Image 1 (tube, rainbow, N blue to C red):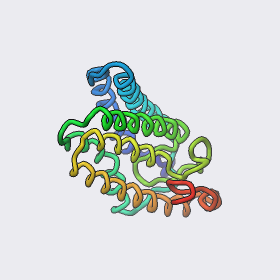
Image 2 (cartoon, one colour):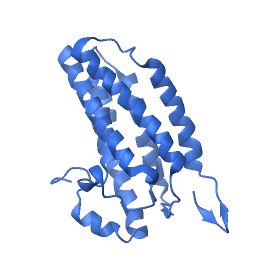
Image 3 (cartoon, rainbow, N blue to C red):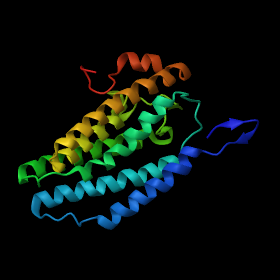
Length: 216
């Protein structure tokens, strides 16, 4: 929320994301356990589904409690990339090819579970600073943010890669590569806002990797 002339403005992001996340959450709860499978493979898939549910439940909680933004990017392209990167992963399951074999499916489930576990942890630590658009609230340097500046995007990239492997489609791979590019651009534009609005962010940025420690 922003404050102007002593009045609170409507938090448009909250008005959009809370209902959207609630719809996704209800759909995922309804589909829980319907993916089939038994033994270790079934357990792995079930854990992934539970983590997805936990992610959207936590997202609702974070948005309901989130703090006032210190600054918001005025870049239209930054906003477009953020929105596209947020919703593009939902297209991936629709781009399925031939059914994956058991090994490919196991890799898919493992990546989805790992990526979602990392994303849930990242979102929990980010807490009230959550935002789809590029906004500045506070410098978060705890949890996974000790190692990378954008761990939530890393979790989303890894989990969506799991979906792509399960989809077993060249088109899905191409869309995933676009998603990676959007997340990188999104992170770069977000950092411009953070550097301008938060005095402590420059020091944090100088000692922390963006997405991959030692590489990026």
